Length: 621
Image 1 (cartoon, rainbow, N blue to C red):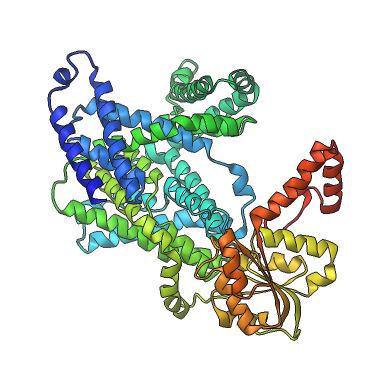
Image 2 (cartoon, rainbow, N blue to C red; image 1 turned 90 degrees about the vertical axis):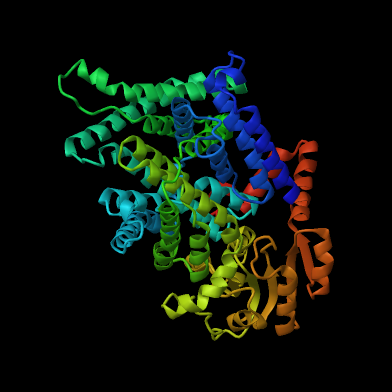
């Protein structure tokens, strides 16, 4: 790692020497300065991305640092303000377009109570918290130069109210945890945060001098643009994308062309309106909002997944341009007090997760552990916060120094995100006694019911357990009544009971919790949770614990690899299954039927016996 860092520093020195000449000399009088500046920005971003990825830090932070290194604050390789603004604006437009492509309104409508309630309240409550915290800092003389203004305090509140979709989703994907309770909660909250941030961007141009008529005009312009875009997306665009669907490069250009068509249309609404009326209706839609609307309308097309996949090829390029552009535009700090402002913004963001996010998730029905883990993993400032700061600077709402401080606060919180993400469960374990003392109690691990024996006990409840319980409730309702589920996700408990089983809160890593739940009285104990989802334990230790407290039980567990099977058997399991083998067995049967020409009949028989997948009302879908 030291060698890699040393080589990177040497490379930066070489870059500085090579490109320290004037743009004309460096290009031999032929290369346009914009091309040169973009090339330098991308070159440095590639170097920093490699270094940051090597040390397991978010690449986005590396892109911003690359911009700082290339700009006036660093090596001074890119100094033309017009070029810097062009890079940032182009990246900004396409970043908003990509965000629009990934907004799934269906997920919001199908979200659970904790996500919907938390999503509706979290953003405005965090804005209030951030505003109050910043004003308090100003009164105490901490960063008072920046924090005395109500508008500045409000901006900071809005900026700390959102978490980074790019960083959080990437970490969940790498850990294969998007389908866990913290993963679903985080993703749901992020969708709501993006919508709230979008609403803020609608009113942002009028924020310094809010007037009701211009604000109404802005919303009317957005409604007109959204209506026209939706109409075009339902009539003309399906045929356009059907024609170009077979050419990836044409698909990309058609999608980006639609983005700028919406941007130009939104920007021209006032000019069009002026030809009919003599007053200013304030209908023009901002460039970013036009791009966002263009993305949302494409996302709703039947070709959306194909469009997203093909346009995604260039997504990283434009995201890089935006973040590098932010770094390029950061001014030199006027003093050490700027560093204090950076720390204050980062601390306010971290405190908001504990004092707003966590209580709200807990009171909306999430258990203590999942609420805390989710809050810790959403600790960073959002890329939307950078967009809002970028626009605030353009509108004259915030100073360039404060906008730069927001960027560095984003970098700071992004850098601490990976260790916070991976240590979230350990952090909860340390904070649990304190949280409990303040009234945030775990649901009680209920004493064993009057029933003294369970025919079946399921340890943990995830996808496999949900399908298993559905089949049991359908085929053997009496067995469902004698089935015990032990799981810490209290948000699912009522639905598990509705399926006919009994459910108790319990931590699978705690032997006493398992004993109190009644595992020692179960005839058959099944663990369907794989080791990469379990926390603070694994199937080997889980089997050992169950065997100690219930020597006569039949224990069925699962393994991730062939090597794990032997260890789990040695721990006392009676049967160990690998999901890959179970899937392969079923798939081989289907393939055999297909080769014999009986696949339609096989499928019909399966659907008749098990129900069509879309009709299965499982606890987890």
